[in-house]
Amino acid sequence: MNDRQSLQDHLVETVQAFLKAANNDASEARKLLSGLAPVLRGRVLFDTLADVVSGDRHLHSLAANLHVIGPLSERGNEILVDTLSRIAKFLDRKSPFIIVNIGQDGKPARIIQEVAGISLIEFSPQDLSDPGTVAHELAHAFALSDHRALDEGFATYVEYLVATGSHDAACAELSRSAAEAPSLDSLLAHRWRDRPCFEGMPGSHALAGLLAGRLLERMGTSAFLQMISSVREAKVEDARPLIANSLGIPLHELSGLLASVATTGRHGTKIRPSPLQFHRIRTSFLLGQTDGLAAEMGPWREYVLANPDDDDAAVHAVMLALLARTVPDQAEEAARFPLEAVLDGLRRRLPHDPVIFALCLAWEGAKAQTSTSYLALRDCFARARAIAEAALDQFPRSCDVLVAVAKLELQTPVEYGGSRGRAANLLTRAAAVAPWPDVAAILAGTAERLASPLEIS
Image 1 (cartoon, one colour):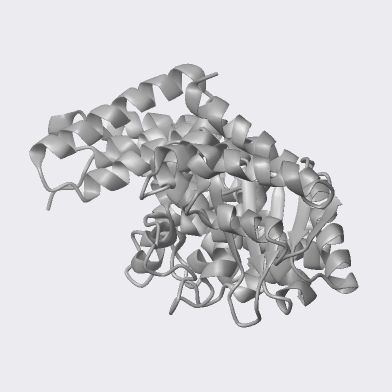
Image 2: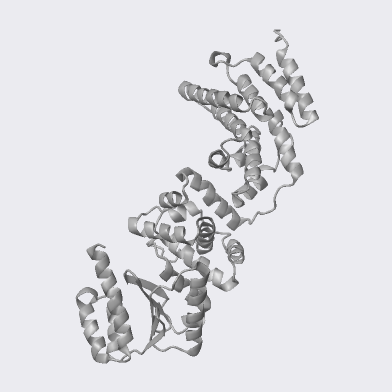
């Protein structure tokens, strides 16, 4: 244990002893306060404790870790004890050491942590009649990162959790309140010292609260609280790298997760596309058909971002995005879909799925079409060729892989190794294993045309 930790532990123990003596042994309380003076004099905590010794304020010890200084009504007592108990139960954590100082009406509630392990919360008598305000400030005592979006987000989530009684209900209410919020990327990229309550940024508390709820859901309480501690210790301006590290994902993949939270907050899209829509996208992707894609991309994007664990939907949304990029009136909508981040997540979670290999091939082909330099184009085709060879070795009878490699052969210029003959052979093999007769017939017809000699006019 280092000297700093030893000092902090000593201060906590001394303050606890002071509170125990304050109402029973004034002499011992003054002695303990004198011992605190060299370290705490001039701080809000010291002045608050001094008011107790002077007899100006009365101390109420409501529980071992909950003490109130000032006038306390029976209703305020009930709200404090009940709310703290519910938060500790929801989070499955012991109550932290909290001193509540009841001041005058008109002053905003706030939490002060001048000593690690001691939370001093200032409430007005009016605040103590509002369970939401009490829950919000008490939540800060369980977790403080000194990063506005994370701290206000966690406290807002807990406030809604206490009010609604369940995680799902809290997230639903937060979703409805987050409609006008800015992006989570912008909220997490700064500490917002100049806007302690997100002034002029409506919906920000709710969206940050929704993020806290989703992170707790995904990480669990212990990992979430450890992440909060890491952010506080590192004193970072931009919290995103530490969040990504705590989740065990690359930073660029975090963008997709943040987008999913934002989409849920703004739209609440949770209706899964129908099996017929899944089938239509799968066959359209195999055959390269783009008819009827109008207005498809937006709803699929919203669903997938709101439901990041639905891998099957993510696969089909990537297929649709790749197709939509080639349709003029859908290209802009397709560009809003975080294709690379979603595909990276699928590749990590489904490393042995032939469809993922097919999607990676299609993505390299799409990037080749927009390459503006010889080197970039060469690199795209080199990566695609390596993926194609690995895919054919592992999945020689996969219709998805055979069609994807055939498309690559047709897209690749002859000088880079493209071959119509190989494409025809691959499509013939794909037709033989295609899961649907109509798709098999179209693939076989395309293979036959490719095998015919080119007409030169």
